Image (cartoon, rainbow, N blue to C red; front, side, top):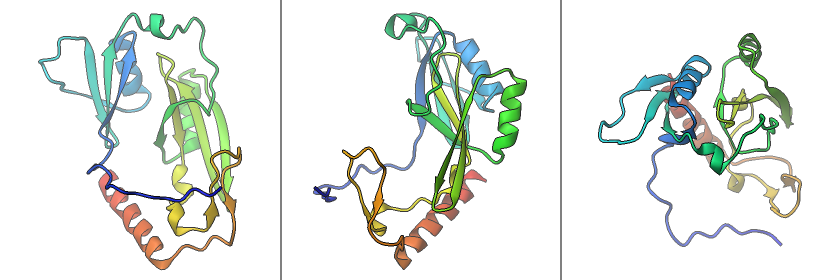
Length: 192
């Protein structure tokens, strides 16, 4: 059974990802982690909020921390969770995976690594937890091109445990390549 893309309505008029919001046991501890380990900067948040929290920003994304000391009642972390790359996570692209690993080692952070290869492209990934057990990934994911599935010949079967089965050689159309090159350049301009 093949899945056919059918869209009877337009998608929401989104611009970009604005922020993620995370419950944390201690705003102070989590704030220090996101500042010192990931390089986020503390920013002003609305004074009308009547709960303890903090807003941080960098890399075009915000992180909103909301203190909930009773978080253990919702998801008890008696001992550290195993670091599982297939778990929910937020991912950050970096310029030097080796340097990121060395810095994590210097900080005494536990992490696991993984390598993903596709069509001769290689992505190195580092996974670790923040103080509340949320998974963070650092990678060089730009090594794998972003190609819309509609532009390439793939059969996608979500029930199969495999990823994608190529039916013909990977040849995307001219317009799709122009689109992706333009998107990449726009993203590059935004980041720098």
